[in-house]
Image 1: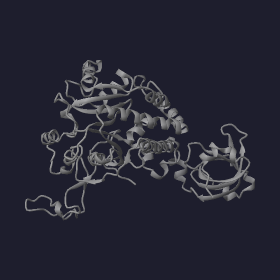
Image 2: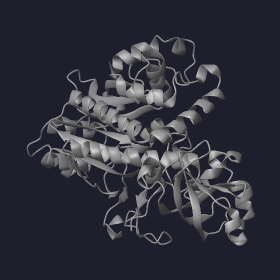
Image 3: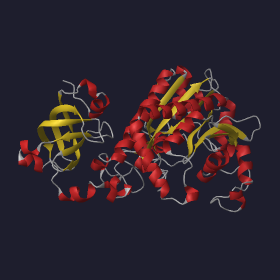
Image 4: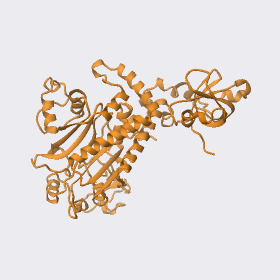
Length: 482
């Protein structure tokens, strides 16, 4: 017999009204030895279980405490009290797992007493809180909506390698993968590490992006997307960086830069709208939390709109499309820049924009999501299409309020001679990427794609402020718990 979740029961209670059912869950609260707030993780809402303690064994009542897990059989009735539509009159209670630790009772299971940092240290209990339950249900909905969007638009899901010899970003901040005994690493005659003796017979790393491999698939399948873990060995402890995170990377044959921007905007709006329609209870909870958090900030730093209102506005507004050159002019002439309020002053065309510049454009100047395009070639990757001016590339970044860059992408350089020249200028070894160059030799076509960091999108949708709080098990410098 199919087990019924508490979400099913609360959503469609009329089907089981005045019937006996069995539910499972954890105790969130037990008041007056009579009212159990039971939650099974399927929803932020609790089921009220009413206990006639005179009809139950005293040992059972004594062990119904916060975090204990129960199996409860009883009758579903319309609630006589305020706060809930229905409740369950308990007829039989089985305690599946006691919570017998006084420390848990008095401290850890009282999340309001602890910072989010403290909760990160309690992986098994973190998911039990209303906050993280809501965050990770939303994350799940975002992930599902991503797959659904691409499936509906005839994209093929491709799994690109996690272990790779290619560095798509050219940054070199990669985690090495080896099977060597680190106390006895073989070396060649020149004294360098002899990777020919390693497991793969060459130097390999954890991937920073599936893009290059994705491009090869797009050259045969037309429209593909990847969705998988990526890794950056960047020694950063900011609220925006993780060493392990998830990336979504579509790649589309025959698309140019404008097509790419259209795809990014349509995709983001679809996913956010899906969450608005399917995560209402969790978003209402997160919206209230967001509102309370804003009250603690200085007035100048407070958001102008609530969380749900912000999400609705992003879906409703057309993204503002602005060239890098126009954006630099705006920043150069801004009061913030002239008065030295930027931590990284904008001095001239060619500057690499920082998060503070991106957020100024989105939150203060345009007051809407912004797509910047046509960046200087010297600050972008080798694979981006060189424009006719020979100064800029057909790159695009989508900027969101509170986040800054949420998507980065480009039209790819499809011309073999230009690509080889750019690789030489940027010191990218073409022998290592012979297979990537081959995609430009056999029926090369204009094509474009982008990368979206899943955690940054979840950060935006949930209103959280630290990226470590939107991934179940964060990996950061000096931290790889659980």
